[in-house]
Length: 201
Image (cartoon, rainbow, N blue to C red; front, side, top):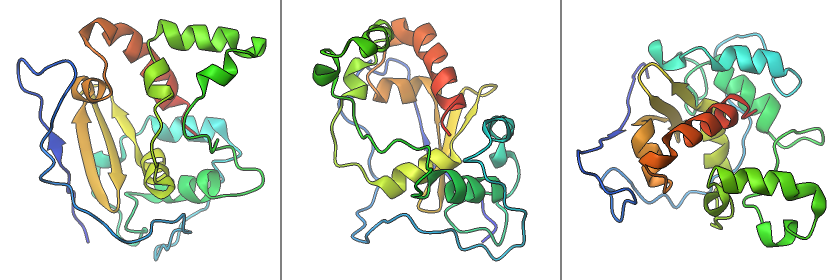
């Protein structure tokens, strides 16, 4: 399928800082089990082990994959070869895997350990404590797909990603508001997002 599909979540003038409701008409229930599965590609390509190369990952992350058509023959979950390679080499469960399996941060436990004091103060300064300690029954495969396919288009101030074969995009302000940030956080959240998104490997 050579298609560039997506769903844009619009932001309206006067949108509340903390969204109490949103348009979920595009969402659907899926009873299938999502598990980490090796990519099934029908196109020949060089396999790059992004789990071993921070530089190669950083170089690939600055290229907008969604500026081009979806590559035919790559696993339907991904837009291009980089996404497939990153998922297979940096995310798939391996003894040497670099992806942390922690789903939330237990700040109460960490507060008793001096080695985390600076990190906790930094999270507090950026007002990230609440979101980082948020507990939910996360779906590892969906998170893995987001992790492999996200792209922050700084020129358009949009974040792009794919889940279950669909391309989504959302403007940065709405993304931040959904996460509970407000205008006063703009500079600090922007700085933190640069660090987080550019180092998600």
